[in-house]
Image (cartoon, rainbow, N blue to C red; front, side, top):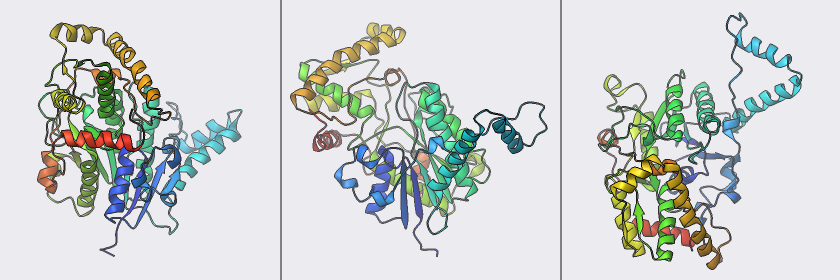
Length: 416
């Protein structure tokens, strides 16, 4: 029926964006059925109480989609064998052929288990919110946990004729530029996560029959956030404790664009519904075959934005290193990152101990090298505004929103 609500599968459903997407769907009663797939059990995912219904056990399936749908071995050059026959010969020639056959069967069964529904129907929407989110990992980690994951679930979605497959990507794939990048601008990924996200975008676009949507995100923040903004807030708490000035590298104008988590989840849903309704006003000739959207707030967030807010919230001095130190850091970033971490990790541990916090959740002031690069994360989301008329509930990062983040940490007993 035309008015029937869509069924939704969320890969990485207990991750930061996945859980908030599930909450948005639950609060607004948007779906007929929801399944959350994640390799982490709900009991270990640091879920806040408000997610208890949206991420309930009856909606959850534990599975690691990155370890399913593995690509078969390539056929050697010059071989006349049909790929599947060659692969079978290849497996049977192995001394542990029975184990390999069992492993292959488990890969195939794993994807079927993730996608199969009790009523035999297919999912309407599939959101891929999974993938490796930690920085500074080995290439093989991103290949397995991000690229392979995207391709495995993308191929399965195409085979099952899913109405909309949404791939979450990052604005870090754009060439660093203080001017906001539009969706069609030059791509030059500057983090390892971005390198493999771009590969995923390109390979997914080649899958025949995949109803693909790509959504590129900046730094996403909000209650319970555990990455970029969380690192800065934990560091600020340490400098407050030490009664020291908190100084940033580079300049106050370095772009670190943001989007609030509730705006991100609203945009994800609205874009998907727009796609299923016929992609109104999408011009393939000028915009490309695959609908691609930046989601970023209107605040043009930069380092100075967060520095000012942190100064107000923590009542500490904030500033920026001079040209000399920034030039040294550019040439010796590894040692600079090590020095920063040496300075903050000990006092952070002391703060946790003094507050008798034994399980601090996902928070840490540990600074990743990739987050200290002199690179702009600067994005333009006019396309989302123009095609969908999307309005942001949180168009700029404010002191009140950052205080809300800290309050969420306190509520979970993560904050010293």
